[in-house]
Image (cartoon, rainbow, N blue to C red; front, side, top):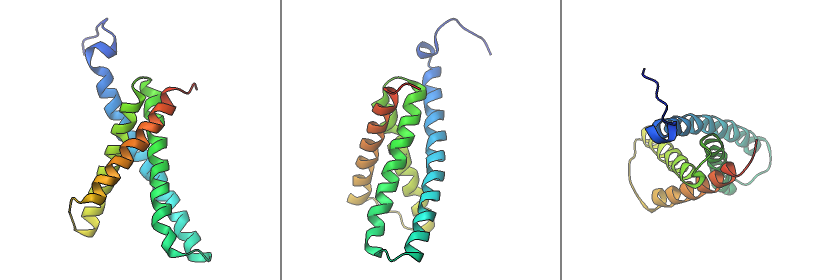
Length: 136
């Protein structure tokens, strides 16, 4: 590979780095979400917790995972945190939707999907803003 004196931001390598970071962090946060959902399943099984609250808790756990993923990506890219976070949230929701479509063999685009897409983008943007503005 030919080395150049052009900074990564100018020769396009930054975009490839950001894309790889998004995919890596979405995978990491899916793992975190699975662990949190397993803990939730234990709580629901062995504690007197109403099952009507489970969908709300699942949504909150997903939002927290998206925020965390957006923070991690933006911290590494260190610029345009809102954009990196939003992309992370959208990729997370689309991946989640595709996995669900494969498992349940049902593929429909409805208002719920688009609502989740907006929630994912906004949650990721929030995480990205936090991530790009924190030192560490």
